[in-house]
Length: 212
Image 1 (cartoon, one colour):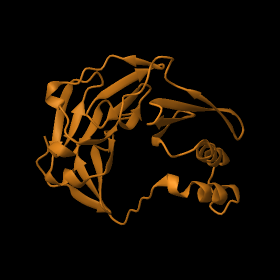
Image 2 (cartoon, rainbow, N blue to C red):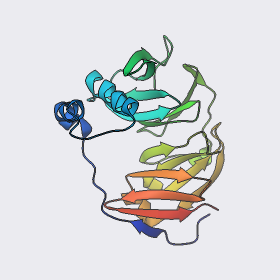
Image 3 (tube, rainbow, N blue to C red):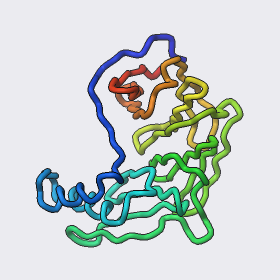
Image 4 (cartoon, one colour):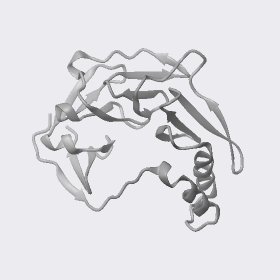
């Protein structure tokens, strides 16, 4: 689908393992050494840090809620505001339902999509597994991440083994792909169908691919 070399649009991005700095982050936020506004967003982060970061592989905000994908327990934890500065915690997945084994990440558009290391994608709606059949054309090799949100019509998969971004319908049907050799080094991405671009993080650089 994509016939043009991606454009470099930004540089100098740095990332670190959040769990390594859990205690220090808590201290910094509580003492307001870093100011986060509005106050509610600061409280969201403090709640999450206090609950523990070690097994969480993905954290996504949707609506007024915060969702954490816990790899060890194969559970999605939902944090819901109950009053100013306080959040309730409960398991999103219903009893007997578990997130896919070896989970890498998740994306939310109302439904929740979870990607595994083996290339399996599961879709959950209201806490139970929903129908999602991955098209054979979308068979994945070394997937790293997935992306969608309520404003995007499609689900996007970072398929580094096949050097491509796979575009799926939200029932698993194949829509298309964007192939680029540099995708093998991409570690994260976001998509804006409104802007017509896929943004790819590779090292300290961010590249942009135009959506066709």
